[in-house]
Length: 523
Ligand SMILES: Cc1ncc(COP(=O)(O)O)c(C=O)c1O
Image 1 (tube, protein in one colour):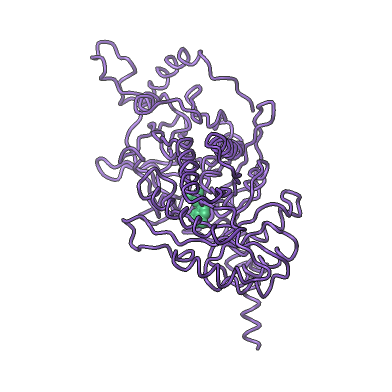
Image 2 (tube, helix red, strand yellow):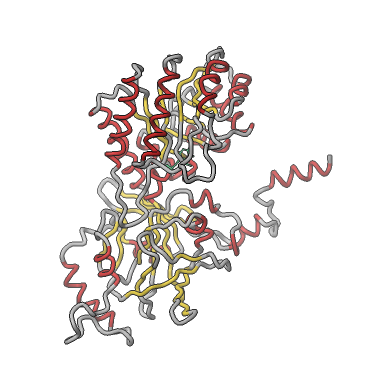
């Protein structure tokens, strides 16, 4: 599929087809009805969007009543694959990574910052192979948070996507399977695997199981934003324990050396007094430790870059990066210590804006005099759990019928749960979408949904009311700019659910647990 620039013919085509389409609605005044006072006509969905937002935008344009996402004609994809459909526009992953890498490098040059920047991808935001493969095309390293992540690291190594020089920054509170896998990785020569100590005793395991010199980091427990229900994060090591941990367990170890100090601010990297004061406190701790530890040469400032979840989104990434680099340098200079190399581990920022979910509006139900429900062929609870659990807003746009009139609707999902709905946008407590008619089915899209939704909602298992996982389509663009698509996975089948639930003759996919249970019974 390839489309040229939408171009200038748009407006001419637009007026004719609007008139044509509006004649379908018997209860609506036609567009530009003679003698109607100006400004009183019912507007089209396109006019609503264009008057409410700066539109078109970089990722969103309209061509002949239909939406383009990163210049990809979504109706073509819907015609080919049908809905419900998850889509990943892979080039966006690389674009975002390269932008941040370039911006950090420029800021370091500008402030004469004598250190390096390393971009790690935080796998928990989307573990899919196609995401990691795209990210790793850009000199990206990896941050992990589970013992099973190490299996992903091994697989990427076997496929030649990473080398033993790739940084593998291992975060999180670690169960034995995780520390074992880390120890094996270190013993196998992955010398840039850096376990970030999350408890005072974690290092004891590595001391026992790792038989080569290895580097560790310490995660600092940051204080949460004042409005939080608790004061300090449960993750990491409290500030006052960091120097004693270093002195007692790392400085005395024949194998371990301290390379990195890490912190993560739960609420993200924001231009607030809270963020800047937590960052400064963290850098002061780095300076204190650096004075007694020569091997400490890096800090990891976590993830937390926001993504565009509304058409009104504005965030100055360049300004924030420059402020971070300048602040770190200023504090280190004051303390006469060398500046650290900077690592980040962006999850949402890497993958969030590559994702979209497309639905059909399959029916409408007027449940009282004013509440109109559009029923979609999917579910918010199972397929966009953040929309349900965190009241997260996404960019919601019609995919077609942009020149049709619109009205206010509630969107309803397929599960029986009354909370399976979506009825407010980021900028307003309402949702407006084109009216439905028999002529053409309405399709809608939620955009920038690429991070965390499968990790939280599950993928391909058993979900509420047995709503199946939708099909997943990958969109790429070759060097000539041509768009190609491929089906990563079809819609989940009933057989796969029957298998998980134990109704099929095949072994359920949680077989090891089943075996363990029977072994225990026999024992
Ligand atoms: C330690 C750590 N690093 C990085 C991230 C990624 O954050 P984000 O997706 O906001 O970039 C998280 C998210 O929870 C995290 O806990």
